[in-house]
Image (tube, rainbow, N blue to C red; front, side, top):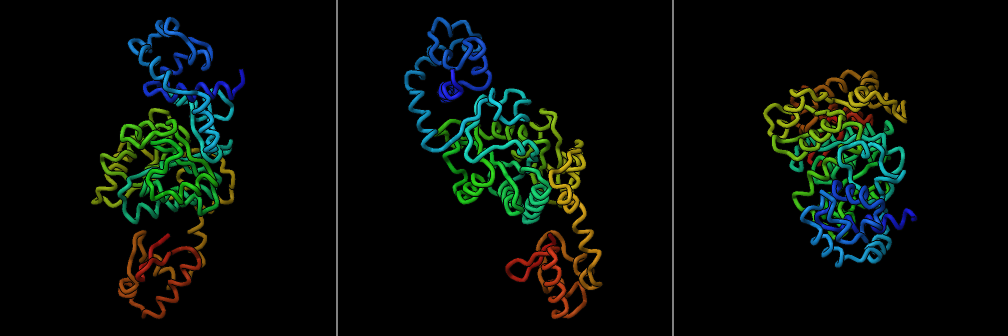
Length: 369
């Protein structure tokens, strides 16, 4: 039996509404192949403990699914299928409890993606959180890591964009099927991810983004990665689910500290209290993982770039840099705090921007990068 033939019937089984990793694994073990499992009569299915009380329902759903037609739809949409038993399946994901038997993929998962770090956080986040997620992702991508996230608005989006802007790879895991874009506002980002990474899901075609799908998605995000970084998370954030999935999977958990008064940082602070590694730069993550980065020179830049750049600053540039926080500060306030005239401050700020140490935002606001 060819691998394609097995994938055809595995996809058909995956389309049955109540067949998850446990029941599909039981069917394979009992029947010997996915094709035999799909074609098995009621008498052969009845003894399987995991299908107790569900055999008639399985037969009924089977009658409504055409395996070949469903496979042709995947081919037309150029969606690849990665079976748990194939060599193309992400090896780190195989190690988790109840890995998805089938992953749908747009783009391309490649071997180097095993060197991955997940970056997650709240949809509702601060400017500081987005900037930190972007910077960490860019530093990790420059050091040869793939950045994994969930393509949600907020921190997830910033993480994907940071990795892509640095010329690296990024993978999104969806809580719906991969022919859908959720949220719709990220359609452009999704296309970039398909071209420079992959978009993955365990859900078959036509699956909407239902609330109960996202905890299942979160275990895949953490399962694909060596470690998970939580940038901003409220006390009830779904990002904490991803962090606890990582702990259950015996993976590293990192958290970025924030303002002690911010509700968006309470989840991160709780993780730090519980033993998560506090993260300021990508170097903190790389050091903890103990992994030699593919681009070792870039990894050094991630940890030491600012130190090297600031060593050559002029006195006024150094003073201004110390005043500018990792959140927007208006030019007038910088002038007031520094005690220098606007012309001199403006020239030094332009120099700092050219050196990549600050970034100017609309409205004459500046932020440290």
